[in-house]
Image (cartoon, rainbow, N blue to C red; front, side):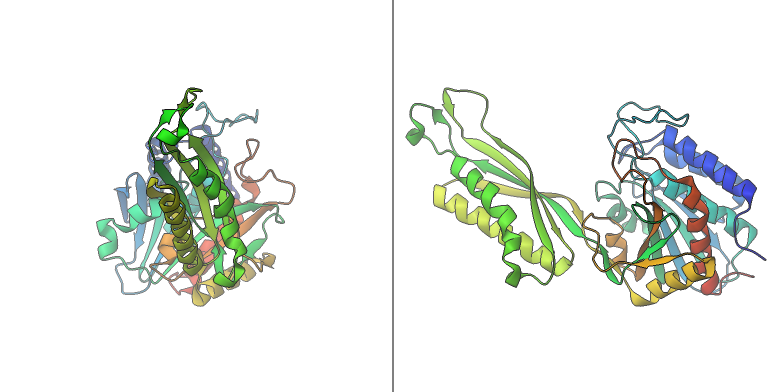
Amino acid sequence: MSLKPDTLLINQLVALRRSLHRHPELSGKEIQTPSRIKKFLKDYRPDEIREKVGGNGLLVIYDSAEPGPDILFRCDMDALPIEEVNDFNHRSENEGISHKCGHDGHMAIMAGVAACLSRHRIKKGRVALLFQPEEETGRGAEKVLHDPFFETFKPEMVFALHNLPGFEEKAVVLKKGPFASASRGMIIKLQGTSSHAAHPEQGKSPVRVVTGLLDGLPNIPELKESFDDFCMVTIIHARIGERAFGTSPGDAVVMATLRSYLDDDMDKLTAMAEYLVDHLCKKYDIEYNIQYTEVFPATVNKPGALDLVEKAAKDHGAKIVWIDEPFPWSEDFGHVTAKFPGAFFGIGAGKDQPYLHNNNYDFNDNIIETGVNIFMNIIRQKNQLNV
């Protein structure tokens, strides 16, 4: 018996995907999205649905009631604060918000897995399908993992995917070890004292600290002997004082994004950035405070899980593309692979497709079937299906 979704189901999944695209919701505000998913799944007989997981997440569970492996598959739900410029019929109806990363398509794929599991019931263990909120901000996965469900549910393996424009349509993109980079947003708040602009010596201006940070932070990765692999620091925002020509500034803010392929390098990069802040502030007698936001660990593939994805792709007949370097962008599934063995992989969305986060991007519906089939083939390899 074939595990592949039939034409009717594919058409239903495409319709679901386009409905989700019309009604995007930002990170932390995914209220209607899980409700739409739950409504779609009502005919597909999950054994349990848990709502409000990690905030607005949804867990759909198929339980054989027999001993066996527990496996988790995850998709993301949130959209981006980007205005839709496309004019197709399923364009976003929410002003200034749109699905420009393809999470609508990822949800459709996961809904397809649920539909297939309702037709091919597992014979041992449990399969949990996670519709996760707040991926774009890096907060969702960590919140989900603190849900009481994971006190007793310890998945043997975890899996997730992402669509990848720029790669051949339906090709499966694999990488040993780190697949996506670690990153974190660094917020440096500087506090001196203001003074009259005619008497800057009467205050403590943070200007020299700011100029030192703008120059020094991006150059830290140039100390290549300090790191094992790729690192990057990008200045994304800076503000000094106020727009007052009679005032020498007394405060400032510098924000930067730190990236690395390896978590150990992220620790080193962070420590070196903090040392630079401390050194400059002591030199110019400026107080400082450092905060971090949108913290993403590296998403690291484990050999056993990656082997299952590779075989599942071969069973599907997909072209496999091995990449040598991790992607420089980050993915909060890294929180999950840091806790459980797992694998993250890509599916090519087409070489000529607009790139992720571009305002003219749209998910390629042609790859939904590939995603569903690979996830189902992984489940079959774990000998959980009666086929």
